[in-house]
Length: 392
Image (cartoon, rainbow, N blue to C red; front, side):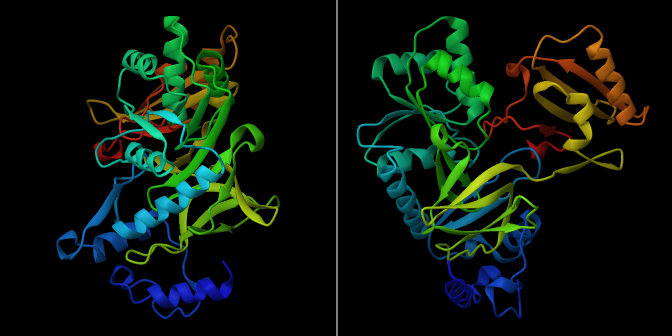
């Protein structure tokens, strides 16, 4: 959007009760402070009371393991408007068409509504959704597919890989030539297994977040993680770009007026790309998450020596029965581990944690299936912190 349009947006929504106490005195959009999860939580807790609302509200919850659950309100009519704009783009790009029959393996659970969102997008494209959900056992998924013959499967990369692994290990024949993913980055290893076991020929991705909804899509076969921005829905900025233009994604939803969300840092990193006059976001990864181990601030990057040579890995933080912190590093080796490699990694972890006797720790070689997947979001994060029950 142009500067004038963004300034007009701010003038229109600045009197919203939801923004009371936020950005007081700002007259220009560019002067608005960038918000993060903590600032959004403060707005919700201070200015939103469902009992005071006189018309219905669409509610969503954040998931994952890195922050306590946040329930985000949306205006129902605005939510429908955004879904229709997104569906129009997906249909024109032939991600979904009227002949699509898709088995939906996203999640319906605990107010985490990714599966119902994809049901809606499919139906708005006049496509058919077989709404099984992530928790349906793989054997049942295969049986449903054999009866109804879908040509498309949709879900997180972790869930799609789980289905592909089951099909491969069970030796069953299942062909799903099209796949659409969201919620995580698609790893090359996952995609290789999906192509081999499920016969996936075409792959698309949909970009979405709880806070701002769905607003981007990619032709992964052609462009990789280069997402077309649906400019009718959002305005995207890059915060603190490096020499390559990569920085934090800052997103403004231009449809939301009832519960406005302006200049929101959504936790992902990427850069803007313009192609044929259209805006794209090239995703690079997640932003830095800081966690504490016995009062010491650490990040995922600190564990690089321990996970070197891994195909995938997961850092698990938990509490023992004695309330001591435990750090487990699960490593999926990219190749057959050398003799003594596991012991070397265990020594590296001990050194990293300063040989702290108050921290239990271990490194283990595992298969991808042994990494923990969130039962709510069906994502497999690199850091799992279960020291607070509300974080899983």
